Image 1 (cartoon, rainbow, N blue to C red):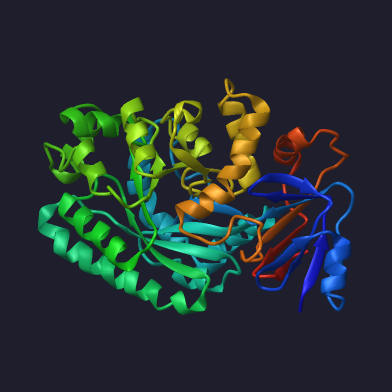
Image 2 (image 1 turned 90 degrees about the horizontal axis):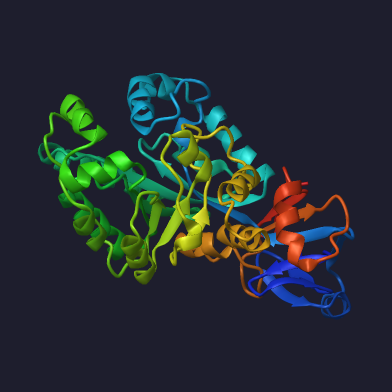
Length: 406
């Protein structure tokens, strides 16, 4: 069935437009005046959304960890190493408390704020069934981790098993199998090389955590810093398995998603931009773990805002994340920053995970998030900012033309 929706504003790749409506089924069929679409599709169902309504493409949360959805107060915040040690200590308890209901609630929370696509970083494969059932589109990042060369083959075979299981779900059209390399300090270069090659061969999205903490940078550069004692105690290791330059070069020619990148240098950020990589920017996670701030105002690389998981956040609400970013990046011009944040969870997010979503234009998938501002906004330049500061949940959500939240 064809539907015509007529909001006050539509957010397109060219910005906010008014006076137009959208005809859609599973895909966007046409964008034109309401009168023209009524003539073109006389039998279509018509939806009027109110004078303060804005129709956005469904939002995209490129990086989260459903497998840690059971956490609330178990983990230690304020310092990255203390947090990491608490994760190791509490991991069995958190996984033991994890069930499908807990992860389904995380998916519902994301849906309520208009997230129609998300990137799930899966370490154990425990979230695959939930990702199969949720109405959202899921880029399913099978994660590989392990720096001990003696266990490389075993780790890679386990990773392949999980990757192939996610490939079996690809026919459902909402799950895209993908690959995540944990981080340069925790993944042996032999494994990195094989995983990147697999991503290229399969043409899948590729992701990695990268320079999230100062400790990681110091360890990779000089085998010093807070990670020195950590690697000695937990892994009986005296030196890093790679360096920053070597790790980056594995991804050359294959635009990927680099998560956090807080402790990158200006030259490294320029290199990431030149290679077409996207930064997954998680401001609340970075603050809670004492990691610092990724300088989006100085970076030429595109960024996609993300919530990270509940192991390092208190919600998966993308509006909470944008409001935090508004406050964190206090030197950035306010309206410009607000527009960049909306762009980061639509078109930038879609490009980062190689998706056809994230945009409202003819032929794109009909994934929408509808919001209503509390009052009329007189200046179009302020629409993004008022969307961010006044919205907690969206009014309606469509995925593939199907109403999923009313």
